[in-house]
Length: 107
Image 1 (cartoon, rainbow, N blue to C red):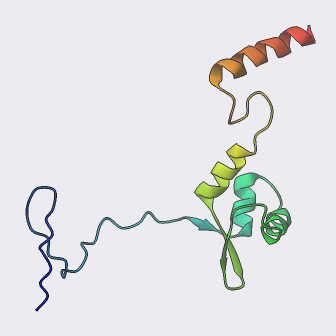
Image 2 (image 1 turned 30 degrees about the vertical axis):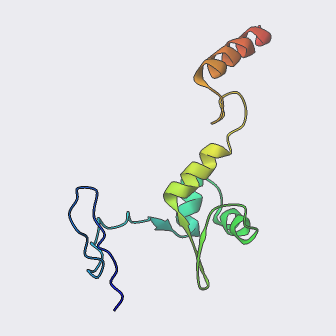
């Protein structure tokens, strides 16, 4: 008869591997928007949102024939699309220094 050795937790207590997994906290709920809601969030036409989703250029979820958009993912995506010295990747000191240069050039 083959006997497997017991498995212990970090605190030294034996683990029951046959027990059902403990249900953790529920997964955060995604707020899914339709094209009109996504368009309002991005301040663009709904037709543009659908065209960009068809071309796989914006984050979206396909549910059969329906296309939905996660509000948090769209906001993260939009922030990542920023361009210029105030963009998402520029450090704060660089943005401030570049902004100062811009005002001197205009003068």
